[in-house]
Picture 1 (cartoon, helix red, strand yellow):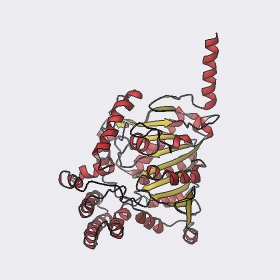
Picture 2: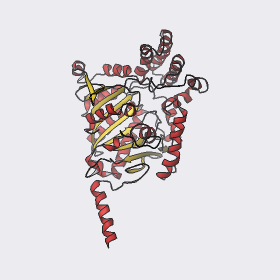
Picture 3: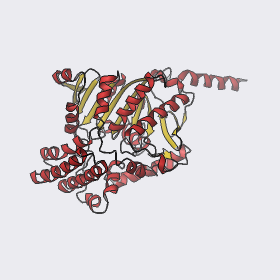
Picture 4: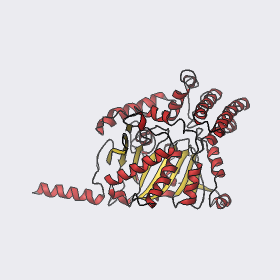
Length: 442
């Protein structure tokens, strides 16, 4: 009898915490994971970490979505273990994990990324709209599994190519809510070092590297010439050719800089290792390696792959091979890769109540801050005049200047000091400020 009472007490506690599906996964805290069929033949994987904050119930804290870039990079892998999850790649505890303050869900997106998979070639996504609609279908499935989160404030965060995917996902989710197709307390989307306007990023490379002294005037001119060829193809809407020329421009950057790290220009690199990217890889391989596999450091990539395909796969009792379809996921989107999503951000600002943010690390090259500033300046939105006239203010955390921000209406831009492409990992203090601005926690 006492055993039944104890079991009932445990179930009641779980019910009150809102974690009826919680279970032990890999690493600390209560978790849940699984697949949502977003279309016939398309299976999207998620990994939910319930907050470890001292709360009466988990739903007292917001739910944050993290979307990785690529396209084809894994949120459950890179974002989780390299940036903001409870454990770091070496198995040690991350002091600045977001899970301390909120519930976090990592989604392997688009289908084919990470543990997500498709049943055949015809089920991959080929454009941004398809990705967005898949994510809306995912949220419908997720809320069916976790109805306790329907009223919980929802915030979307992303990085890199996520800066294309997240705005359109946010827009489609907002409209689906307005149509009554889904119940969700969706509030904000924040774009980290975003690939929102690819050509603005590419055009920023040459002047940025020249001003830092990483290339000389001759190197600048060669990078700029390659970038302008990319722009001509973008202007002509020759999208796949533009993607290939983007890769060629990247090769010029690697050659002229002698192997600068695209994700943080201050990261120490081996001065000869970049030659493998130039000599041994074709353009498609080079693009996949630098976008889906984040590091020129192949040893670190191997550590993550071994972790995800070994201990994580075993702990989560999965049969899917992590990352097996990531390369194809990227290749299927080559025709969409260089297309901008600035107009989607404009529509979010002009036609919705969603809070929109951009945060950018000053040491990032691949999506350099000057490029982000340029496409933001080009936007046409209701509060643009107010934004231009408003002052830029400093971000100070524990008396240290961590960056700057500027806001008007439902838009905020954050400039982050001492950070490259991966802001949550490079400057967690600044990232915590950004989290507080959007979620109230961090």
